[in-house]
Amino acid sequence: MTLAGKISMEIGVHATAAKWFNLFATELHHVQNLTDRVHETNCIMVMTGITVTASNTGLCTYGKVTTYHESIESVDEPNKTITYKIFSGDIDHEYKVFKVIFHAIHKDHGSAIIKWTIEYEKINEEIHPPFGFMEYLYKGSRHVDGNLKA
Image 1: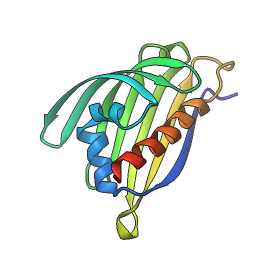
Image 2: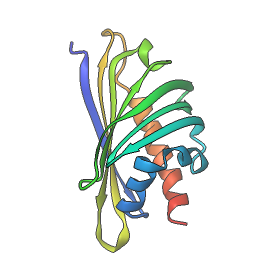
Image 3: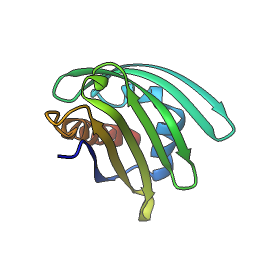
Image 4: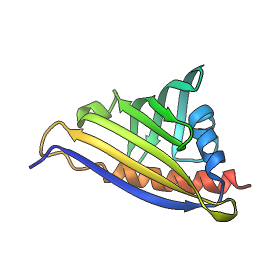
């Protein structure tokens, strides 16, 4: 049985891809105000050129309250893609590697598709793939979209 895996989903949203990308690339600390899925974030952001690094500690609900840190590993502004490294806290108890890739894709008439991909490596075979975290991203994205388009 393999310990590494990848899961992804696409969500049609009403706000523009540019609006979504800006939120997750430069205003990550505002996400807690747009969804009840994120209970608390402490975010430090440093911008150098087009590189953005962040340290974020969040208490996030996906079946239970979970703590973790995240940092922005890479930003591809032209393609509106951000790779986050999720680590520490509760995540380290189950995964050696946990990356979340956000991709905002422009559609016609100002709407977009948000693609979330989770790349992970479990610490052992008894750990389940992070479907609960994917559900958390889905529900959080729905809440954020309702507030972004307003």
